[in-house]
Length: 376
Image 1 (cartoon, rainbow, N blue to C red):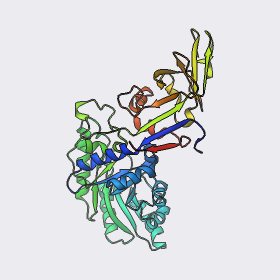
Image 2 (cartoon, rainbow, N blue to C red):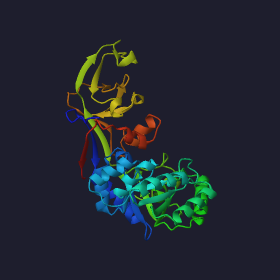
Image 3 (tube, one colour):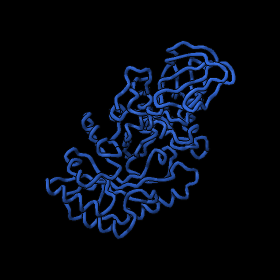
Image 4 (cartoon, one colour):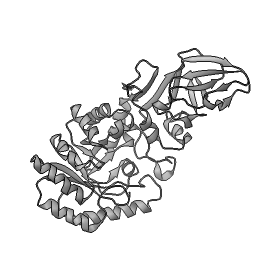
C-alpha cells in the first residue's frame, strides 16, 4: 500500500518519548538483565526501523520480531544486534535466517528435524530459542517426553546453537496472578528438564517487568512499554500501576478538507445513519477504515481546532464526517489520537470506545498513513 504523502493525514511519532521509555526501563532492569526491544508489527504501528535505531542507541541488547521478514527488514537497515523471531518460521527458511544471523523459535521436535535437513544441505548453523507453552496455548513444547527428546537431539547436533529458552505469559497484566503463578511453575519444570545450556532464559515481557513480577529472566522483552503504553486494560488498578514512567509516543492528526451547512432532515454517510434534527455544520476529514480508522469509531469525539466533535454517519473507506458547533475553515487541524494521556481522545480512550485494546488501535494504522518522526 502506497503512503499518502499528498494527503493531510499523518501518524506522528515522538522518538524522544521512545528513548525516554527505554531509558526508564533500562534503569529498572535487575543486575545483569538485558533488554530486547520488541518491534514486531512495524513497531506496533510506530515504525520498526526508526524505533529499533533509537533502541539500539539507548542500550537494547537485541530485538524481537514476529516473522522472518521483519527481521530481514532490520538487517537491511544495518541493525547488527541479535534478532529473535518469536513466531514459527517454516523450516525451509531456516538457511535464510542462519545466513542473516537471525534466531528462530523452535515450537516442537518435528520442526527441528525438518530444519536440520535444510541446514545440512548448505552446511549452516542456526541460532535457536526453545519455545515453551507454559499455558498460553499458542506455540512451543508442553509435554515432557517431547522436550526431553528435543534436548537429546540437540546435544549431538551441530546444525543448531541453542541461544535461548522462553515462554510468554497470558495474564501478567492481571491483578489475579493465580494463572501467572501456574505458568511460572510450568516453565520452571521444563527448565529443570534442560540438558542443553541456553545463553538466555527469558519469560519477562513488559507486563511482567513493569508490574515487578518476582521471576527470573535473563532478559526483558520490552514491547508495548517502549511506545509509552501500559499493557493492562485496567491501569488504574492499584496492583497494575507501572513501576516506571511511560510516555505515549504516537499521535494521529489530519485536517478538515471540506465544510458545509446541512439542513434539518438531511442525512450523512452511507445508510444515512445520521439525520440532522436541526440545521448544522459538517466537516469532512480524509481518513477512513482503509487507514485503520474503523467504522466502530462512529460517535467518537475527535479534536477539531480546540473543540471536541463527534463523528457522525458511518466512517467511509477514505473519509469521515464530524458535526461541528460552528464553521471552521478548511485546513483546520483534527487530532484523532492524542499523545496526551489526559486528553479524552488518547489512544486508550479510542480503544475503549471500539471495545478493543490500544495495541490493536496502533497496529491497525495502515501503511497508507505516512509516519512523521520528531524528538521532544
